[in-house]
Length: 141
Image 1: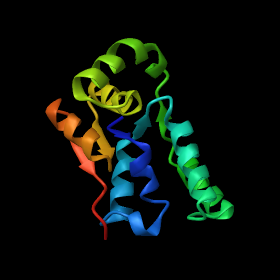
Image 2: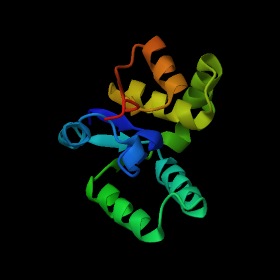
Image 3: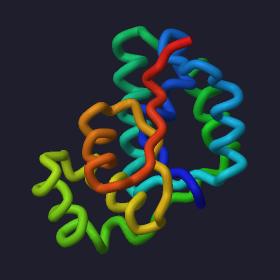
């Protein structure tokens, strides 16, 4: 696996106003390289989708279509994340001043020597401090 993708990055393909420059080419690169995410990723993604439905930013039908696309991407969910929560992840959260959720993405990227894909500025900055390569998908078309 080459890429660790966080929920904020994946959702860039859900909302037209958040699509990164060269979105299709970037997604193809991520798919070809292989994507992975920590164990909490599906719940984080589901929570953001649900909140977007509540706020009427996303219809249930559009959410379902997006989630079908996400499922088709074969993103590998890391099973080691829970075992590392109270040690490596908490240590990274403390040292980098991140939430434990964000530290889990960073820990996975460090452990797998992968590129971190995110829109989260604090997470991207922490990754750079830890010498983890990054892709910032915040850039709009």
